[in-house]
Image (cartoon, rainbow, N blue to C red):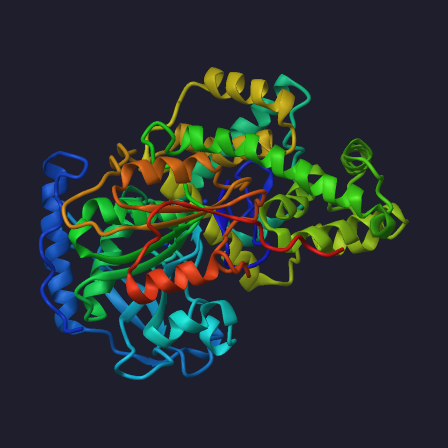
Length: 533
């Protein structure tokens, strides 16, 4: 499952039937050679040289900034452009692709400007192009950073406006109801396995030329080329969710190119976790955060009337699930669609009240509110295409980054065992990732994330009860990056901490971005305000 912050709820479909939210980042100079041996091997040497070639070319070309195309929905003064990168960094003079970028200039004086701050929201598959809108929308949390930095967003390779990939017709992709992700029989499992295999085949058929190159290390190399195209000697980077893994891989491959890096809601970078085990760990964390939400709903029973204990709220959920399984609500909302809608609550605190409110209306007899919230909108062809594309990129990157188990018995055993105590998300997540078991393109060995020469202190921000990127990931990255600092938001679990209002966290992020200074020791902060019913 992926973690991502482009919209409050990006419905994206697991290949085999669970709708799952987006689950998971000065003058120009020729780029110095990357740290070629970060993960060892001659392939990396060639790719490091290829990156240096592409970066030097981009530094010379710059970016032809224009007003953004009308259908990008990015109002002036945001500007848009493209950066050209090699499809394969081992062949820098071979096939090229164009990456969409956008920017808004710093709001302070020329003297206050510290360069560009590049953002990745996660996914994999999330678009970063909305980032400059934090300035046009006058987002108070980011006002101080905006004085010093141009805010730069981009669509990573395969995403949106950057050589987008696809695995299935978008309208087919969103059709509902899907199969219940929780299997009742071996026949159900076989049907889901067939869907997963067909999805992988669809990716090969529609986007096979891109699949071998849809890796996190390649996106990190793209980031270095974008840095050079912007005329920046060093990178300032903000990565959320999967964007933290992109940042970690960049910092490993190009440690001497990093100036400031903030990583928020951290993917565990351990090679053993990327990506099969990371998804299993997520299932456990989701169950914990689902319970936190139910506790909150129970505490606010006067508003929602769903029960005044967690057990009562869970009973209402199970009853709803059973009803929708027997006869999908409005003919379209079954268990898979319910999980897609309800999982936004464990993801984001901002979804707690809206999700509880829709649930409450349903229990009071208003089924339509839930159908409207959870059913696909077949008339929204642009939104459906974006959902399909996001899911295609999510799958392609996770499948290509690492070698996945190909033995169905292992998937079956691991997910059956986990489901017993963590039923909310386990099987939905399993089917979403199962195409990786039969992936038609080459699978890599993950980069060994570590501190390299010249890497400055990295700021790591994490909530303690995050569902999409469990807390252990932040601890692991902190261990690997010498001189990094970890800010822990205690007793909190919203995914994506840096955009929330927290007087303990916001000034520290500002201070680091503006001065480069980190606290002398790690910091534990009280939680941001609990949502109001």
